[in-house]
Length: 234
Ligand SMILES: *Cc1c(COP(=O)(O)O)cnc(C)c1O
Image 1 (cartoon, helix red, strand yellow):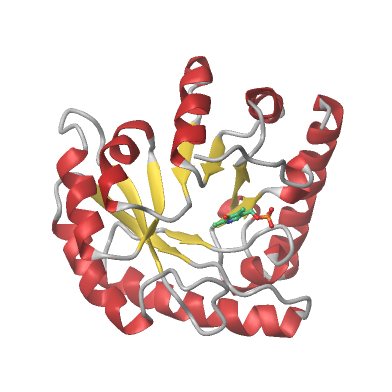
Image 2: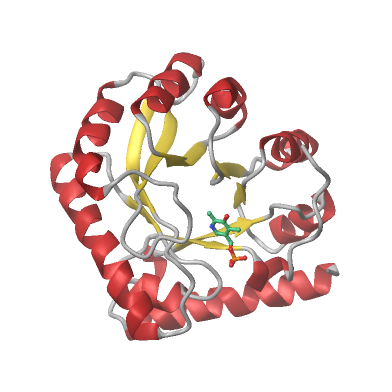
């Protein structure tokens, strides 16, 4: 994708986000856009950064670390949104500012242990597997309160909220129903934990439904960078 197209796409996405916020009675600045740059080259990240993007999401650790290091001059915020292997918690805690895909107590403990105590705590969202979840990842809704209590007690972490990846659907009402379910759980978590301020929900195809339900962070890949590129193994 050329820089011009990336910039035009970002303008379009930001307009969609503010239109959706306005339409559903949310403040214009209530929703942050994370640019999901998985499989995209460093030049695409730099182009998006020049267009004002500060938050970038990555799914694959090795690929991400190379990009994070190549963009160290830009002071970007990096979010890990992919599946987590327990033997990879050290590089996650070292290189990322946020991890959105935590679903187990063991991972929480390891991320906290590996976070340098001289740095800000690692921001964490718990991934919840609501009905209609596309993948099998995410904790069961009934396990979220205990996981949240655990996360809140760990010195290396700051519990920020919930993340979900609903099953793809082209139907707005269907998207909205699932998003509402996640949002209910999020509001419950907010009542129990003062640090919770982030509902990480909504992708290119369902951002309006997510914003209508109360998302505070949408994760946008395709609508900014175009189709994902082939990825070399590893
Ligand atoms: C790839 C990915 C996205 C971005 O999806 P698009 O449909 O390309 O916007 C968002 N969230 C997660 C967890 C992803 O893996």
